[in-house]
Length: 352
Image 1 (cartoon, one colour):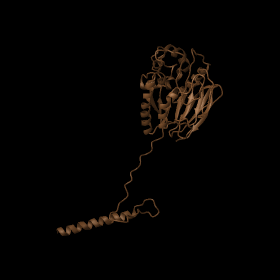
Image 2 (cartoon, one colour):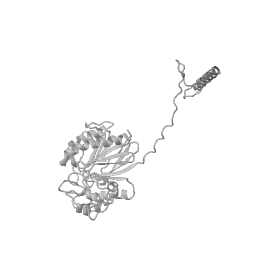
Image 3 (cartoon, one colour):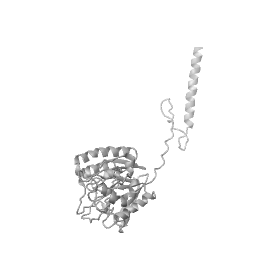
Image 4 (cartoon, helix red, strand yellow):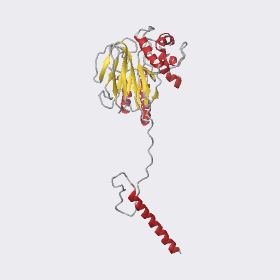
C-alpha cells in the first residue's frame, strides 16, 4: 500500500510539472509567437513574474498664477496716480478678481526708514488691497535694519495699530520675524523665501542658512517639486551707481544650482532684468536658473552701468510688475506688465 501511495504521489507530481510546462508554452508575452521562451538547460521551468498594476498617475496640479515686484513705495508717497499707486491698484485688482494665487513682495516695501505709522499711512492706502495674497521677504535696509526700523514683521502680522489685516503667509503660519526663512508649496512648485539682509547684518548666520537651504531644497526635490527662490538683493544683475551684484550670496547660489532651481526672483536695483538659464559660474546652460530682477514697484528708476553676458533682457524706463504662470510639468511663462512706461518682456520656458 505504502509503495502504491508513493507511486501515485510521484505520478501526480509529474502531471503537475507537465501542466506547468504546457502552461509555459501558452503564456503570451506580446511577441509575435505568442509564447514565453523556455529555458535551454535544466529541468525547472520558470514562469514570468506576476505583474502588479502600476500606480495611477496623480492628476496634474493646477496652474500657479503669481504677480511679483519689489521696491514699492517712496517716502510719504500716497498719490493714486504715482507709479506706486498705479502698480498697487493693478495688483489689487488681480487679487480682488482672483486672477492670481499669490503676490510675491520682493522687499523694500516702504521708504526710507519706515515704522508702523509709515506702513499704515502710506503703504496701506496704495498696496493694502494686495495683502490677502501677499508672501514677503524683508530687505536691507528699508524693511529692516536692527535698531533703526524693525516694524515690517509686525505690520505683516497685523500688529500695527490701524492695520489689523495679516499677509497671506502670516495667516497661515503666524508671526514671522524679519529675516526668518520659510518655504511654501504652490501647486507642484516649491518656493523658498530668504532675507538677504542677513548677508549685511549677520554674515555668519547667512552662511549657516546655506545648510538649511540645502536641506529644504533637497527634500522638495525628492518629493518631485520644481524649485524657485525669492530673495531681495540679486546675485545675477547689472551694476548701477548705487548697487553692484551681491557676490556674498554665492554660497546660496551654489546650493540653488546644485538642486537645479528653475527660477529666482529679486529686487533692489530699481529696474528690470532677466537672465539666460544661468549656472553658479555665470554661464548660460540649459539646466540653469532664470533670474528675474523686478524692482519697478514705484521707486525712482536707475540706469545700468555695465552689462554682464548672462543678462538677456533689461530696461530702466518703465514701472510695472511681473506676472507668471507656473505649470505642473515645470514649464512656465512670464510677462512684464507696464503701468508707467512702455517697455515690457514676455516669454516661456519649456519643461525640463
